[in-house]
Image (cartoon, rainbow, N blue to C red; front, side):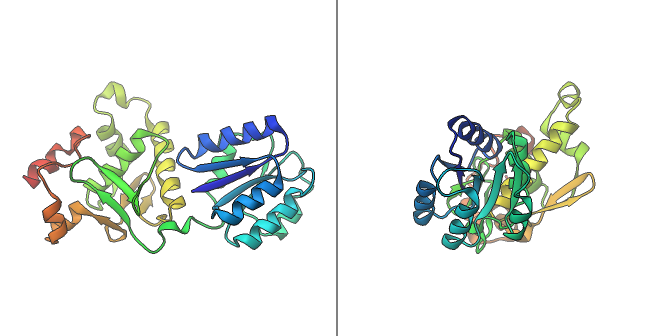
Length: 260
């Protein structure tokens, strides 16, 4: 995901940039203190989201948002301002979001979780999952990056479970092996689940995860996976297996044994 941030005050721009990078570590973030520079950049680079201050010298945020929409109609505009007087105009413009200052990573994350337009980069393909060797997940040829390392492990476990719904307690018992480690992990698991859903949604794969109250699973039909191909007897999956399966996770040993 490519995000631009525009703010004509240096300190405020720094705060905004840090909040965006903390909320979405995998994003490509470009920052500008002048609207003209941001508009020029957006004309040459497809951007999925733009965080814009409203009260700026020269071209203000409202005018910049309209210009950016002309360049890319599906860019997600999020206004960041210390004033609520522009809220009605923002609604009429059908912008994606509106953040009141002070800007925090939590506020930015909330907006990114509820974008009007999802990242279309992978809309025509499936999420590509690699289980043989080390586990990894790709949008096209680009590995997806998560805020927490446990988020990737959670996805790996859901893949390993072959579409079965996994309860929160089951997930905790697998991701943290000892009772001491498992203590108090419910809140952390909520953060991990939220990170997983957010990253997949922003990559254009929001329908891959099936969620139920206290449980979640993966929709096998929405992914391309070497392990699933192996199970189905697809030649590509059979040829991909070289005796290694999700090497970085100790809990994968049971499935590895079945493969052997």
